[in-house]
Length: 240
Image 1 (cartoon, rainbow, N blue to C red):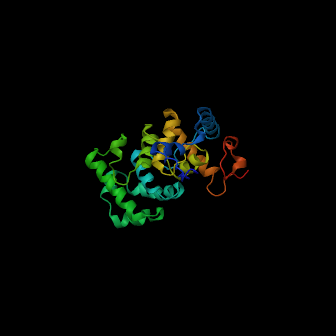
Image 2: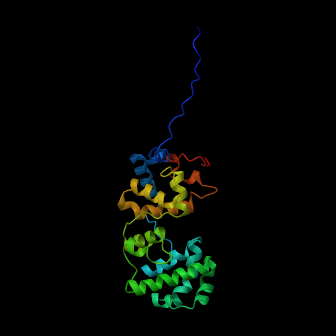
Image 3: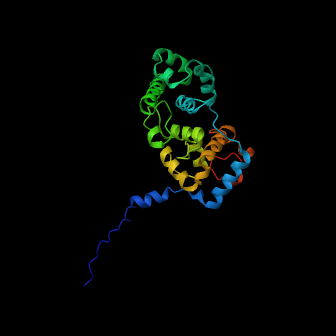
């Protein structure tokens, strides 16, 4: 008798666990020596990098950062040059005429939402924090219109408090291009960067990456030939 043939079913490989899937997104460029080399090059290129929003105090920086959403720092500085002469305190913004304020900040875009945020944040500062911009992440995040990016800008630049890393469009783009993070969500990128950048460098690193993104590593046509990080970078969209 000939033995019966048995149909062997191909067994599919078990699906990767959530934990395993997370590992595949881990950036390969986070070797401590490579990160240290990137930081050294940024120090070399931008030793004096700082926030480019013009301000005289923490409150003005807060308002300018709220206005900077989807807007350039240059445009914000143009608007605030006259804005801060008219509105000189949290009280002035809190009790402003909404229609007038909308017209004055209109060039920054999204002026209706920004007016609500500026006035709401000003009122909260008066009512909850005695007229002073709060100095903790937990407290500053309670202000209307303030998310982690704005909070990190104010805490880091105004108070020298390293509570996190500013992740704007430039930092997001460069973190991906330099393979320091493979995430797209700013919150996840910030967490990735906080794990590999020494805490004492968080504030300066943010400024330096923003400066580099504006001056050299542009979104569409990065000036790779002028970049002192070129030899450390293996991005697919390099121009050299």
